[in-house]
Image (cartoon, rainbow, N blue to C red):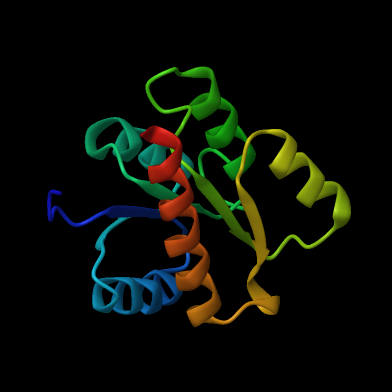
Length: 132
C-alpha cells in the first residue's frame, strides 16, 4: 500500500472558498491543488492527474459543464471522480451535471465544509474499489 497523498483538484474562482477548502482538505490529509478558471482546470487535470475534482460551474474562461464534457471525452481522465460544488441549485442544472458524468452534485449553500470532505472521502473509497 503506498502512502502517497491523494490529490484533490478544486476548480473554483472564489479565492476565499479555495482557501477554506485548502485548509480543511490539507488537514484531512490530502494534497490540494487549485485552479481559478476552467482552462486552468483542464491544464491542471492533464499535468497533475488528480484523484478527485471539486468543480464549480460558474467559472471564467470555460464553465464547469464544458470542463466536464472535455474530461469525459478524454479516456485518460474520464474515470476521475468529479463532485460539482456550485451555487446553481436548479433541478435542471443538477440533472445536467450528473448526466455529463459528475459523481455527485452539491449546492454550496446546502452543505457544510465537513460534509464536502466526507463526500470526497466517500467517492475516493468507491473509486479505489472500482479500480481494483
